Image 1 (cartoon, helix red, strand yellow):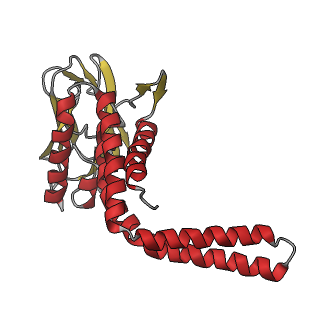
Image 2 (image 1 turned 90 degrees about the vertical axis):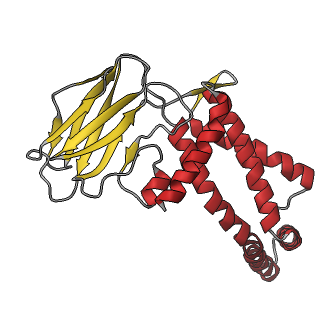
Image 3 (image 1 turned 45 degrees about the horizontal axis):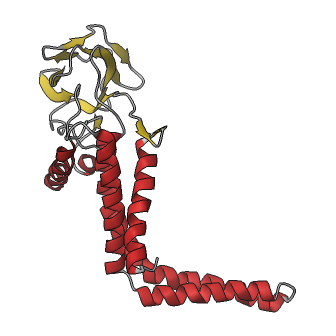
Length: 272
């Protein structure tokens, strides 16, 4: 599973690379392309005739309820018929919806890992939080954090026994690439600290391999012998200027994907 996740991450790295530092443009284009691709996948996997018949029957039942609002028997029969048509609709559309869900989740996680947060600016601070595995005492476990040249790490750490967390404050002094090393006992965990926009996933959190490698792209997997349960970098939230407004990445993605899906849906008359 980790290998598949790495291949997906490399693929999205290649998609984002041509946009350079134009983050907003990259997000808008990828959102539109994703929406168009989702619409085409839905058309290829769906049964448009069955969907059309189910929609027509549903509309007929709704019209029947409007025509006989005072006849309880006819109204109840029309209402139950409308529910039955919805069952038929989900039988016809269930398969393509499931396929879309499977395809959309990696896209969502990859875009979220790149656009939900932004890299640090020069002399901007962030928190690095290391959560220890269950049973370990954060007050007693030896844990340190160091960084490459260009990063200032506050030697004072905040420790919480209840949450098993060790928190450091770091500051980027320039916009170069930085490497951090979290050392717990005698095991080192190396990870990047992003201070410059690139096509690669930012890497906000990592708690292991497997499914977590799909959800949190960008940080390497935790070592098997590590005492760490997770590690997290508190990058600042990103905002995107679009039509004069500052928007969250998810709002841009939703608008862009809907616009992208509408184009093939209109040209090919896709039944949804």
